[in-house]
Structures are given as structure tokens and as C-alpha cells.
Length: 145
Image (cartoon, helix red, strand yellow):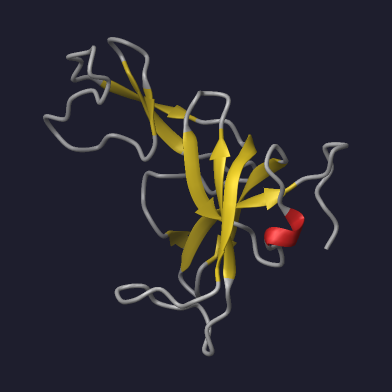
């Protein structure tokens, strides 16, 4: 199996999102900056050089919602009939907020603003892997399902 989007995350035993840091001002970005001739998104910086960095594996839920209705094309549902899923905006220690799906088996009932989540990698289909956010308990252990 391979990553659904190459260069956005690692798939090892401790997966991580891959971001970019501007060499000039240290502003962090996700998804990573990949285009030639790209420039820093910080309005106070004219930097054009970026380094790839692994972002924090854990973060804090900033907001969340559920996708009760199937999104329109080009979205391809994982199942037929469509199964709703949860989305979480997660604030990372690097000061950026990353939106992503919540891990299989978890929904809005397991999420709360300020709650901790951890990055996991799960199969999207028979060929592709995708990263998702998995809720963890207050004690730092994974939430039981």
C-alpha cells in the first residue's frame, strides 16, 4: 500500500505529517510547500526556500463536525451506501491547525474541543493509505472503542 498523497505524511510505525518551514522566518505550513518558485505565505517575509519537517503526532481539537451527507464529485465514497464520518481541526504545537478525518470507529461523540488526538494511518481502499486523527483519553492512552 502507498500514501494517498505522496509527501504529505509518513507511513512508518510512528506516522507523522510532513510540513514545510520557511528558512527565512521559520513560518510553518501544511500541506508542505512543493511548487518550484513558491514563496513564503507570511506577508512579512519574502522567503523562497523551505525545509521539510515532521510535525507533531499529537494535537488538540480546535473544532469538529460530522459529514452526514455525501460530498459531491469528485469525492469517492469508501462504502456503498455512504457512511458518515467525522472531521477535526487539530491545533499542533507548531502553531498551525490541520483539518482531517477522524479515525475509523470514532465520531463526534468521542471528540471535544480541547481534547487530545493522535495521528494514525489507515487504509483508504485496497491500494491507498490516508492519515486521520484518533482521540486519546485524558490519561494519554488511546480511547477505547
